[in-house]
Length: 125
Image (cartoon, rainbow, N blue to C red):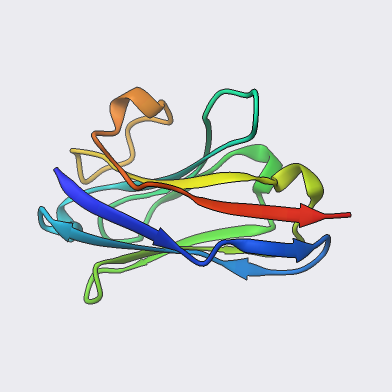
């Protein structure tokens, strides 16, 4: 497994931008596809975006397409989402996750085997 630590969450206003970071250690970061998920109070954990091992393939949930961009820097063992035009409905705890495969194969949380502790993002209207 890979150890993951998220940072960068906070309170912003609707329309603002925010960039989260997820720093990885342990298993070779570049060997794994990575993903971002989020969980709002009272709701199930939701897939947000994923990226394959070299950043060449990405996948997004429809609600964030055109606003969020997932990227990775394998030289820094770090995963990012750049989140623009934030909306109140984006409010949630955001988690990064590591997949055992280098390829994008799933959006299901159960298929990811490493998780960070989460970082809170709150968007006020």
